[in-house]
Every structure is written in C-alpha cells, then in structure tokens.
Length: 148
Image (cartoon, rainbow, N blue to C red; front, top):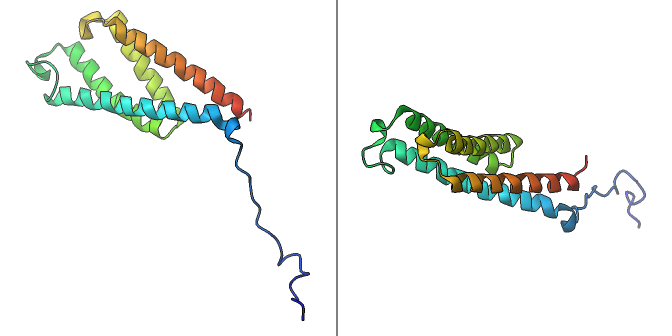
C-alpha cells in the first residue's frame, strides 16, 4: 500500500534553505568586526581608567578634585564617552563607530589644541590617526562586500 500523502505537494514541501555566503565574500566584514571588538575592549579599558582617576584610584597623587577644571572636564567626558563607545563597538552598531570616532577625534583635538590639559602627547595623536585610517579602510572594504 502506498502513502496517500506522497503525491500531495503541500505535504512534501521541503523547508527553504539559505546557503551561507562564502567565507571569502565576508572576509573584510569579519576583519572589520574583529577590529571593532578590539577597539571596544580598548575603549572599555580607557573608560574604566578615566573612572579610576575620577574615583581617586589612579591618576595624580593630589587627587581628582585638586586638578584644574579643564582637566577634570576632559577626564569626565572621556570616562563617559569611552564606555558608551565600547558598548556600541562591541555590538558592531553604526552609532558605536560614530561615538568612537567622536571620542578619538576629541582626544586628538585635546592633545593638539589644549596641551595644558593632558600635556600635548604627540603619540596619542599618532595612534588615534592610525586607528582612524584603519577604521575607514576596513569599513570601506566591508561595504564593498555588501553592495546593497
């Protein structure tokens, strides 16, 4: 005796399967997400360091409250923005990249235009510039993999 449902097309439908894109087609996207995650960890560490300075665990021996107002303002700003950027970068959200770019450009601007705040460290500007270039390069390469 044959199966009465064997000829019924509704009962014999197979589920639709979507093939995963080839690994080579998402190579740059994977690298970009890895870069974002590394930057998230670094932003988290930087934000926690700034909070440690605010709380008196790290930083100047005199304490946070005895520093100049511009120094205090910049420290609190980076304590907040770096942690927000870390969350957004870890999630690989667009807003995370924007917040991270804002934090990086802000840190470079403080170092260049207000050297009295943190001391005008040129290496900070150089590192921020290199990281920005890497970010832009990886973002462009990842966008080329997904033209839609």
